[in-house]
Image 1 (cartoon, rainbow, N blue to C red):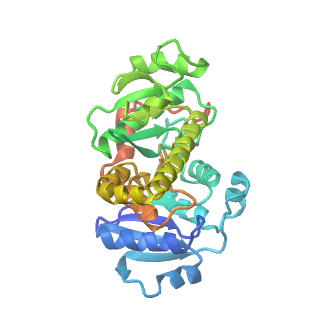
Image 2 (cartoon, rainbow, N blue to C red):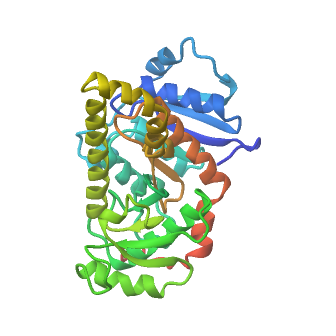
Length: 344
């Protein structure tokens, strides 16, 4: 938990991700320098971490290294890795959250291991059936929360209802959106459309008090900003997320190619560069940090495996808001949770 000085303590998996420990350590240092209310514990091989810290200027009194001897690799079976690698940076970092030594844990490591560790080590809030992975993505009208995008491939309607509640609270408190619009991802806008899950979930959301349910939403409406929270199972959500990322990458590449295709195009590119830069910045998902695993007893944030320092920094910084705005307390106080642990 936060210490007596009011600092928010964040454990950072220094060894997780394609660019670790270089980018994870740099991102942590940058976050520390930019936020005086932050205390960071870098979890990982002490020698490797210290090497990355050499020559760095940062407030040393607000950084600690927790030495570990193991690393969970991306391709490892998640359950086996979490159960056997007790001295890995991921397991030790999550245990620090469970034991209240830290308020949050940030990792760029294996998504599967993050999801398993979140449930087995950190543990769910009583009454939360399944924790969803919920990234914030850019749209033409501002940020949208996609919930779930990777944690629960086979979800139940009762779980989607909880996703809607948690998503609404998160966007209201963290993003400052008053009465956020909550929509159910579907293949049509009509109430009777969809599969068995969406047909069962729609009336439950329609009757649910405390959220602003606006009905079904088709995938093509998501980038346009037709909702602030998009509710779905992880299978559909992950497809949406990967398509979003893929189209953005291809489109950006094609635009750059077209602007460099001739002398006339290059002159035109110089003229539109300021406006284009502003527009592209609006759709830069890196500014929103990582994807929080909501509904756990402590915060776990998953950033991209290929994340660079700025993404790690933003992922760490979002933990400050989460703690200060007491998001878990909001979940407990506003969701009328019933503990169904034995049935979940």
